[in-house]
Image (cartoon, rainbow, N blue to C red):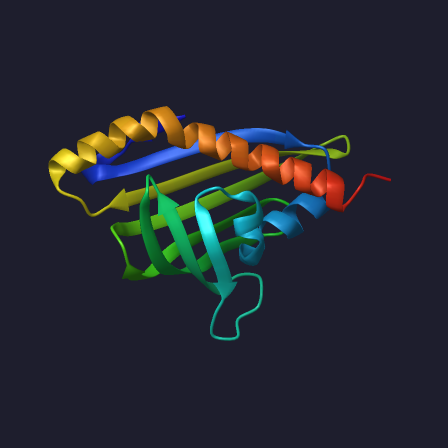
Length: 163
């Protein structure tokens, strides 16, 4: 589901049940460096400044949002293993993405895991362009997030088969 927030922000969210344990799903998907393998908005990601995975970890991201490429540094601001992880943009490098946050929540379901993914972002575009992007968002971002979670599920099923 995609909807507008005040001031030009957009929020998109999706949920999916992954056929793997919360432990496997959390440690794979909460690692920012794995994002390009499963998250369709992310083209490149790597940790910076020698930080390690977890709270305070900083990463460089190159993302494509509606054909607009942006680069930024993010920081993990919430880290509750097997439960929730969240990151926010702390420095914009280039592109129209002026703010970005991503939140992942996990809930175990008898050897499977329900993953809830939400992203919030703002593009620094003229008002007319923002309206066009909002229309495009309503048609494509939620589908991309759902596909990203399905891709995560397929990756984990192949990489880490259930016992």
